[in-house]
Length: 538
Ligand code: HEM
Image (tube, rainbow, N blue to C red; front, side, top):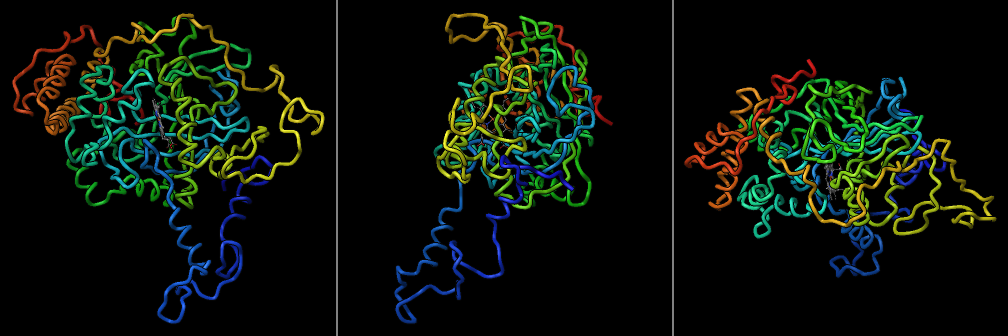
C-alpha cells in the first residue's frame, strides 16, 4: 500500500478528500436535502413552462455549466501516476535533502504531457513531452518539472510567450500545426537559431516516443545542491527509464494517432494496472560550483546546451517506481500544480535566465487555472510536511484556521509559528554572488554558439535515426508554405551538417543552399544521444 499521506493539520489527506466526496446512499441536493426525482424538472402543469422555483434543476444545470476549468496554457494534454522514490544514499554527500538518504522512501506523483496540443489532442503528435515529478518529502514538496528533451528552444524566459505563440495552432483557423500550415513555427525557429538544438531533437525519433515508460527525463537547467556542511555542487538531473528509450516511426505515429489518440495514456494506465510498474533511475551529472559556472567551454547556465555523458557520467541517486493510477483524473492529473519554485533544503536554483522566469510563471498561471491562490489545499497538491504558512482567506479557501494572530512575532497565539534557526533544517537561499551590478538586456556571449551541439547530436545518431530525422524535417518543412522561411531554415540545416541539409533539400525538391554559418569543426559524437547506439540501459 501507499504510505499514509498527512495533511497540514496532521490528518491523513484522504480524510478531507473523502469527506468532500459523495456520501450516503440517497440522492440529495448540494446542501444535503433528499430528493424524490432528478429526471423531471418542476413545471406548471404536466407540459410546462418550467418554474424558476426549481432549485434542484438550477443547481444541477448551473454546477454542470461550470464543470470545466481552463486547460493549461501549455502541456494541456497529459496523464499521471502515483509512485515512490527510493534514495540510494549516493547523493547524501552532495545534498542535505532527506529524500536522497539510503532507502528513504518518498511518495511521488508524475504527470507526463505533450506541450502544444489541447487537452483532447492525440498522444502521438511530434512534440516535446513534459515529465513533471512532485516529491512529497518530509521537508516540503520538491517539484522537478522537466521534459524528455534535455535542451530548450530559448535561452531567456522573456521569449516563452513568443515561442508558444509560434507553435500553437494558427490564430486564423486554429488548426494545429501538425495538420496544417507550419509557417509560424518555422518562422520562429529559423529566426531564432538558439532553437535549432531543441528542434533537431523534436525532428529525431525522440519527438514520437513509443511510450511514456520509455522516455528519458531531464531537469534541463543546471541546479545547485547544498550539502550538510554548506558545500555546493552544480548538477543536471536525468531520469533513465529501466525499459530503455524507444520511439515509434512516423507512419506508426500517424496510424496510432488515428486509431487510438489515447495510446500513451492507455499504455501507462494499463501497464500499472497489470503490475508492470514503470521505473526510472534519477541521476545527476555533477559539476564544480565555481565562478565561471561552465564546463569545458559549455556555459552551464545556457539551457540550450548539454554536457555529453561521456565527459561527465550520470551518477544514479535513486529509483522511482510508478505503481498506482489516479482514481479521479480531474482531482489528480488535472488539478495537480507543478512549480519549479517548490524546492526543499539542499536543492536550489541557479541564475539560468530561463529557470529564473519559470519561477514566476507557474505560480502566476495557476492562480487563474485553479481559481485563486489556494490551490495548495487541493488534495493532490497538499504537502506531506506540516504547513504553517500564515496565508489566509482568498478564493476557494477550505481551511478553517484557528488562532487570531496570523502574523509574527505575536503575543496572542503563543508566538507561534516559530522560525527555524539556520543551523537547523530550514530552506536557505544560497547566497550566490551577483556578478555585475549593471542592468542589461543583453545575451551573454557564452550563449552565442547555436550550432556545434546540434551538429554533435546529428553526428551521434545511427544511420537509421539520421534517415528518420531528415525525413521528418522534409515532411514538416514541406508544410511550411512560405518560400523565404523554408529556405532560411534549409540554410541552417546546411550549417548544422551539409549531409542533413542535402537530404532535406532533396526531400523538398529544392537545390542545395549556402550554410548560414560554416559547419562547426572538431565536433565529437556523443554515443549516449543515440537511442540505438546509446549506452543506457540494456
Ligand atoms: C507547464 C516543463 C519552460 C511556463 C509545464 C509542464 C512541464 C513544463 C513538464 C507541465 C506540468 C504539468 O504536467 O502540469 C518545462 C521545461 C521548461 C519550461 C522543462 C524549460 C526547460 C517554461 C518557461 C515558461 C513556462 C520558460 C514561462 C516563462 C509554463 C506554464 C505551464 C507550464 C505557464 C502551465 C502550468 C500550469 O498550468 O499548471 N512546463 N517548461 N515553462 N510551463 Fe513550462
